[in-house]
Length: 462
Image 1 (spheres, one colour):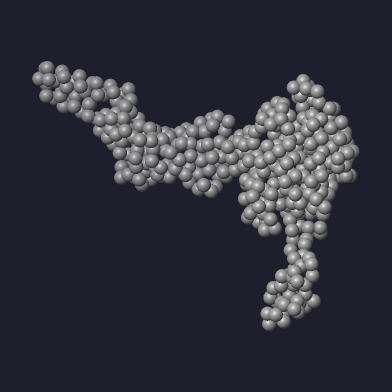
Image 2: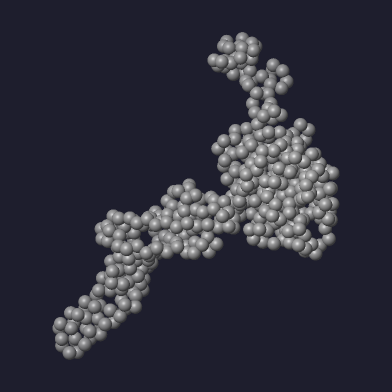
């Protein structure tokens, strides 16, 4: 459902079970009326008091009449929900608007609305609506907010109806629900030129469709304003009309953002944990590279890439950009919204996925960029990451160390010192930087842009 579209409009509730189930909606007052009416009728029969019998029948019939009226009314009250927007950043707010319509010819009694909301989004909203006239509507709204990324269901909407005498209360649950996607926080990054990077569109990323001489030229018809020096005379003679060589077509530079999700590589949980910092950094990088015109994919240690691996090795958009890139950005952000720890012990699958990209990412003349976010790396994984650099024209690594973030060695295992890991990555050609707690990712990104090939930042972080 698109953002802002109503859901649950006129949705049927759960099976009502007929009038018998509606009788269970009698309140204590309603049951007391029925009991008093029956008692009065029995006394009238025993004492021979006709007037008392009328009173007893009235007391017993009134709750039953209310049951019948509400039973019909609850199926003629429709509900809808409007969620705006459906995707927000962590810490952002979304607005939920509830609307009730009375499609019957009689007014309703007291209505109470309740929407089911996960506790992480806040308290469960409840609203009390007074009488709704025939054909009338009521609208109420509330806001939801979460500091934790994820996908959260909203609904189903529950409606409780009550008669004016308080004798009966009936509940209806609508079946439709919405989903709020909370994506990681993103940070605006400075426009820097990373090592080995060409711009998304521009010098170094253009190619001519004619690479091997006149036989490979793909001509098109002459258009007013075309440079006459681009006229292709052989094609003009063949087709009998003026033909020109097609202009050079821009080819989008490609970039891979690699996110290490191994559970053994990170410690801690919550919004301020090392893993959440890495997820937020990956989201910021993806957003920035897409804005710069790159064709981007998200890759995890499990070897899964987003967008899918069909076609261009998982890269989005080709040279079309536009709407296709926006769709791919949404897919990647939705993936980061729910990404969790993997049970993997190594990065071999990610290495194979990068190697399988072939010339799409690396190789001579490639303008591919690799940006990695890594947790703890032992000797084997450090060597594996170092070999990933061979497949990229430029590579930047942000390394998060558990000893720095948690204040103790990672799970009491022997790991090479952080500086040693960074040195080995730099020797392999990576621009490797340490990511300590509390540092703004935008500053690290700037440091990566200022670092010469194969080195980290000159400051105190690397």
